[in-house]
Amino acid sequence: MKYGKLIKVSPDLPDAMAIAEATSILGLGGVVAFPTETVYGLGADAYSVDAVRKVFEAKGRPADNPLIVHIAEFDQVGELVKTIPPKATLLIQKFWPGPLTLVLERSSRIPDIVTAGLETLAIRMPKHAVALTLIKTFGRGIVGPSANLSGSPSPTKAEHVQTDLGDRIDMILDAGPTQIGVESTIVDVTVDPPMILRFGGLEQERIEEVIGEVRTTSDNRFLKRSPGTQHRHYAPRAKVVLFEEGNVHRFTNLLQEYQFDGRKLGCIIHSQQLMRFKSYLDCFVVMGSIQSFSQNLYDTFRQFDQRGVDLILVESVSEKGLGAALMDRIKRAAANGSLSTKEVVH
Ligand code: TXA
Ligand code: MG
Image (tube, rainbow, N blue to C red; front, side, top):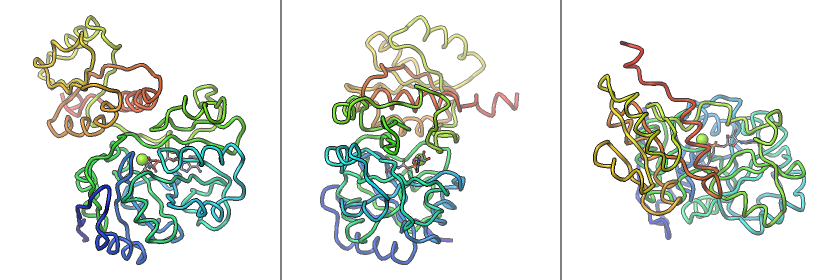
């Protein structure tokens, strides 16, 4: 068995020796977890079938869920795709490096295992010095799914990677907590108007400022979606229940409904109206902005799980800007959670 090797690096100026070691592991077909501005990724040589297979195995990821190729230089896109539509060029110029993944028509350079046999390929250039230095030094694209066990919340700290995958991968580059905390926005630019397949760190409004109107999968539920969005995702073990922002009445009703029976309750709240409950329950209070909510969401889910919380009441936010991504993840978690094994055992 291999043991994960966690190496601390500066997020702004990573140590050359650490990068050299990580690069040599990638060169040998190994797997290295690395930080990005969204969440930690699980890196492996995108051109090696064996290396990519190890990533699927380590995560326990279904083979029909394709991976994003991460690049560090603009000229690395050319050989991966057939064409770059004009709107894709605009988005690349404006938002790369950054939390935007583009789905393009693929060339045959990347092995089928990466795209799960699809004719398209997802590509992104992360905005993080460690990720960019790693990929530049390695010299070609690396796959980078979120570095969590399939089905659990994406890792926003190296410790999360260690917990999920520490004994299954070769190295973890630890650059501290990630800045955005939810995954990249995925835009399919093979269709016009382009379509958002997954809300994420780059707001729809900012995309539309550059290329005009985009569609979203919620516009038409029969349109294709990102394969991964159909799998169980982003869910803590605890059951998640969303309630309307500032609705004290609903919150207290939920407390009454669930609090008997010795269940452990937690909550994530942010509005003034709810603050009076914060010392009464195990609560995470979001301080300040929606950015801080998104930075802390997955870590908070994991902490509640560690403390054995059975039910998490989450106060909703408006689905504008980053709120769209945040609410998407919380709703998925709410749809997935089960009310602990306790309930089944009783
Ligand atoms: O922020 C992120 O994107 C992070 C960091 C590490 O870069 N990565 C990430 O990768 O979230 P992953 O594998 O956890 O999620 C990738 C999503 C999956 O839902 C997958 O189905 C979708 O991208 N995807 C990959 N290739 C696709 C394609 N060709 N067409 C449509 N969706 C695709
Ligand atoms: Mg993921």
